[in-house]
Structures are given as C-alpha cells and as structure tokens.
Image (cartoon, rainbow, N blue to C red):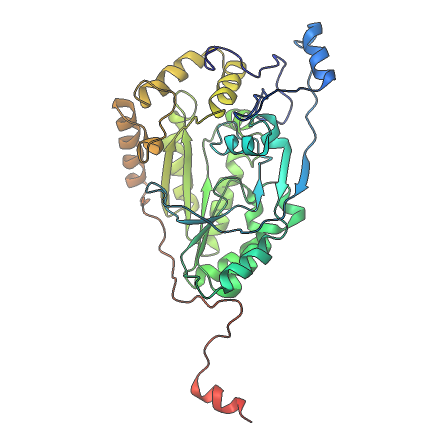
Length: 376
C-alpha cells in the first residue's frame, strides 16, 4: 500500500495531548509491529472518536557512548563535526528529519521518537578523551543537529551544560541549534565563549502562529518565547541566527517575512532556512499528522511538496534536499533573500576562531617570565 494514500501504522485515534505524532508506524527494519493491548482494544471497539487519548509517559534510558563527536562530509550543511547528547526528542516536532533514526533502535519514528528517549550521560567524559588525543585537529563543533540539546530532560540531566563546560574550558569553537529557552540557563558559559569568538547560537523559529506551533512542535517553547531568547542572547553579546526550518507549503510559508522581521528586531544577525524533508518513515508520520490536524488542506500541501521535489515526496540528493527545485522553490528562495536583506540579516554563518584551542590534558603555553618564576 502506498504510504501516502494509506494509513500505515495509524491507529485512527485522536492525537495524544501534548504530543506531535498521531501514529506509530513501524521502523523500516521491524519484522512485526506491536501496539499495547489496551490501545488495540479501544481501536477495535470503535470508541476512539470521542475518547481523549492520555499523553504517553516519557521514558529515558541511559546510553553509554563510546564516541561523542560525529563527523560528516555532507556538502550542504555548515558543520563537519557535531554532538548530540540525546537520541529522540520530547519536543515532538512532527516534521523532524531525525525521526527515522529511531528505526535503528527497533523503535517507531512516530510516538516512540518523542517518548522513548536515550541520554548519553558520559558525553562530557567521551568529549574530553577525544579532544585530548594527539591526532585531534580543532574544527568547530555543532551541538544539537539531530535532536534538540535543550529538550525538557536537559533541565535535570545537564548533559549539554557539561559538554559546553568542557568546550569552554578548552576554548574550543562550538555552535548550538535549539528551539528552547533553556539555552539561557547557560548564558554564563556561552557569552564568555562568544567574547573569544568561539561560540554562536542558532534559534529555530518556524512560525509566529501559536496554534500551528502547538500542533507541530507541541513541547517546544512558544514562538514569542524563542524571539525573546534571541533578544537575550544578542544582549549578552552572543552571535545569534534565526533558523526558519523547515518551511512547509500552506502551513508556515506565509510567516517567512514576519519571522525574519521579529528576529531582526530582537537582535539576530543571520537568517537561514530549509524546505521540509520527508525521508523514510517521516513521510508516514507527517502525512498521518497532516490528515488528522489539517484535513482541509492536506492534499494541497502534499501536492506542493511534490512540486518542490520534482514529482517525488522526498529528494535525498545533496543541495536539492535542503532547498527543493522548480518554480516554487525559486519563489521561496527569492522571498527569503529579499526579506533577509530588508531586515539587514546576512545568510552567512558566524566565523568561529580555532586558534585558541588548548587540549584538556595539555597545559597552556606560559611566558618566559612565568617559566623562570616556576623554578623558584
């Protein structure tokens, strides 16, 4: 059955309050698909339409990482090294391109992705070990590329803060991508690094419409709160950019200019965007959500996505996957460029210094006077 037209993995029940996905499609490696007995009974009995679904509890398991720095050579992303302190993300963004990664854990990229989380509690320990190797060569590291490094469980676990403490202690360049106001908690570290030219933050603001935000990123900070986060980062001297990512036709594409104007007024220096991507199981997760939440425009949205992807629902090719192609992709690109120019926002990333890095196990070089004084 075609996953666009059918309802693979759907349970046809109302969306759980406070969650993004409305379905639980099996991962592409799964040999069978299981649902809880109580849920299966409710579906079979036909009582699902009027019975509210309780929000599934969030479960966090520990994952002992062997390495924490991920390297990539993708030509269409701005980083070659990244760190993700967590697998899965409680923000529940229904459009998240990282959802299919949960299939490697034999879990569903649907609700499992936002309720079955994994925390790399030894991340800072791994990072110190990797930075201390003699073969290590300093390059900027981007934190939070697959899941938000400031999702709700970070408030108590503080893994991201430990990573930043390690990087700041080594004067290693880093950037952060988040849609959470929790980043403000670590302003003491980030602002200090920013003064050295070794830190930047990118805040994702997909729209200014609170109703849409609640629907497709239910546990992330409200749009107005993210704009305030941009303001506080900028006031602290941190280079901050706004990410309008992803842009989905007939959902948030009408907010492009408003988001850039609000971000610029708050102090953002740069602006960036991507077009909605629907790799692997994300196609089913997003389509199920779209039909559930916006049935009046679902077909129009999917038709326009095909237009942006040369007749397909997803295009994995480098460069094209981020921007799309054709008339509508060109129109979005021109609108974004014009709005950014009007607001004085650049589209280049902040340049971060690499020459200040001192590995964790090596003492910084001292002056001759200090060396002589140490003899006494």
